[in-house]
Amino acid sequence: MSTSIQRKKIVIVGGGPAGMMAALELSKHHEVHLFEKGKTLGRKFLVAGKGGFNLSNSKPLTPNYFPQGLFDSILQKFNATDLQTWLDKLGIPTYIGTSGRIFPEKGIKPIEVLNAIKTNLLKNNTQLYFEHEFVDFDTTTITFETPHQRKEVPFDYCVFALGGASWSVTGSKGDWKTIFENKHIETKEFEASNCGLEINFSDTEISKFIGYPLKNIEITCNDKKYKGEAVISNYGLEGNAIYPISRVVRNELKEQEAFIEIDLKPHNSEDDLIKKTTANTQPKNYGYLFHLNKCQLSIIKAFTDKATYLDSELFAKSLKKIKIPVKRLRPIEESISTVGGISLEALNSDLSLKKIPNVYIAGEMFDWDTITGGYLLQGCFASGFSVAKSITERN
Ligand SMILES: Cc1cc2nc3c(=O)[nH]c(=O)nc-3n(C[C@H](O)[C@H](O)[C@H](O)COP(=O)(O)OP(=O)(O)OC[C@H]3O[C@@H](n4cnc5c(N)ncnc54)[C@H](O)[C@@H]3O)c2cc1C
Image (cartoon, rainbow, N blue to C red; front, side, top):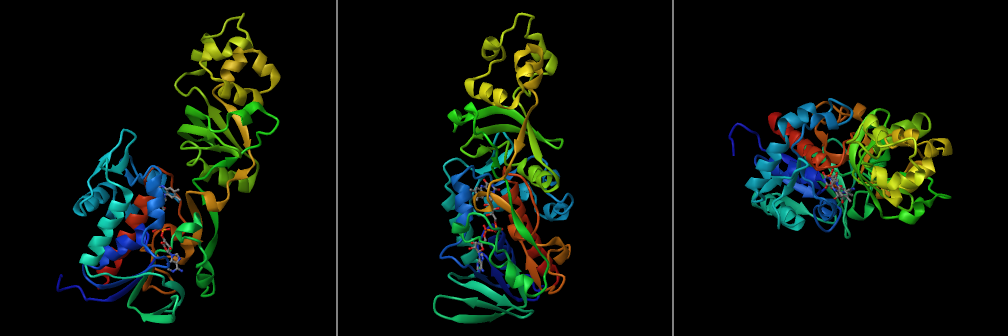
């Protein structure tokens, strides 16, 4: 331990990626107590593991964090390479996939990554407490309820890393928001992010194609474009090209009606497509001519007027901009992440609370947004790291 750093008692609440990272860094110099409401650490982290388990992304990070600029200094302190190095030191080698996403080496299970973090927390003498639900706090003391008692714990510094409000089964319910509101700490309503889009497909043939992917497409909303795949679901569209656009759609829905545009042929120009047609091209040949399957044709039919569909040149052009109205976002509970929680107005630039500066906030529980593909976990780990660094620098 460095002799120049004053050892402090630090309470961390929330055993997700942000809380675990803050605990691991702080326990190098301080006495750290990590409290979790559930019976285990990292339940949402394990849920993420069942999906893609993108730990981070090697592409430029900062353009994908919103509001823009908010994460610049946080990611400067702890970027994707730092995360890879950190994991490597824990015994978890990673690799960069062709898409730029960063994964644990093949064969390493999510639970092994979690266990590696837990082993190192214990090695650093972090005290772990489970079934401790935080219910109140002030500038020096935090109150927990356990199945057996109400308990008050004094602290020099406290870090809250309570997560967002989706997938409540993992423990991240957002029900802590009122505790902060009662202390006049500004909060914002939770809203869904990285979620599916509800679209009215009734009275169309599209409902025959539930589960079908629209591959290699580009989705646009308000000039923001994302490439990837959209999957037809019983409520609308989901998939890796849909989740990132949900942020833009959410903002559009607040102002007016929201539309997305699908480009089914992002690798062909309008001219390329028009050149495929002749004066004799008939609608019955569209599938063959433009390499369109029945699912794609049903989307085009549902959202293109008859005159456009029957005119082969107009049809060719329409393949690059099928305009689809969005009814609403899917509910918060189902979304991969949420925005809202602790408002940015409540925070200093080092993520301490303006009203109680020895209390810090990290991870998904404050009002920021990013896209899927590893950026969420990177943001949570990096904010946990940044908070730990700020506390250590103050001592
Ligand atoms: C289906 C799915 C797939 C995902 N896939 C990816 C992916 O591949 N890549 C990626 O980057 N991200 C992914 N994510 C997002 C990522 O998992 C989250 O952004 C991340 O886990 C948030 O970390 P956190 O530490 O802020 O909060 P959380 O992981 O939510 O942890 C917060 C913890 O605080 C505890 N807590 C809450 N209230 C209290 C209280 N009052 N007292 C005590 N403890 C409390 C909770 O029990 C929980 O354990 C995915 C999410 C989902 C739902």
